Length: 368
Image (cartoon, one colour):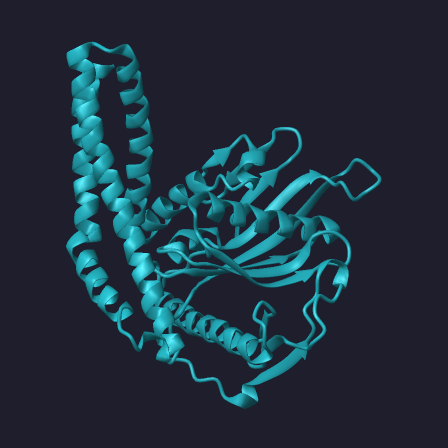
């Protein structure tokens, strides 16, 4: 096996060099230098909103560069380890080299998938909203299981998450939840998760041991620095204020600081209760509403173009994944065919295989 590693590692380095070129490390370094200079300005925090944009952009680019340089260093170190193992005929070092090669192959594969994320908003952070669908307590419980799944996925990758709003069900689980994942390419990565998810299991809430099918919807939108392209007249929205709530409808604060904005023409509803003040919650809700309207406008334009071109395709974002927690114990993506026979690890955040398969499928589908 050790004799096979050098050519395999050479092929892996070639793949990595292609990735490095696509990522454009020199541009990344130039951006970091420019943003670092701005971040070091003594009057940076005179404008907190502008300062937040600068520091966030700097953090994202530094994380992206660190990921690339770490892989490059690991490839260099593995070349040395392989050479030493061959010279010393050391079985322990050889085993270590083989293990590291397999780990590196997966890491480079993940990086390669990221190079497929070339959409307009793919590099941005993401706002994820989960809503329970049909299925009663099973559906609200399923929605909470999905929320935990995504939070665990983010935790595995070290991505910061901010829960912006949670609407708890009277029985089990949640009616809905909205949270932000603040990481480079979080939108491009998680957008593959958008759609209807289906759970089939023996219900823990019913007296009869009958199979219950329930549904939850996942929506993923990019975090927009500015949504100036969408003008929302005051007459088009209704703003309601209320107290933040906990499980079972329990009030968790004593002031009406939570905000719900309804866009009357489309029926889109956005709720925010994470910030401390009503003003902050309203501003956050308006940013999300503007983003949703901007994306809706682009979707309508794209649909119109397809109609004019005579192309009619079903949306890939409809029922896209099934989770079976009885009998066969299976999670299967209906678009890509990718599946896992261990639902417990999937619900614990092991989603990278599904996401990578989905990104490759989407890219291939769009190219066709």
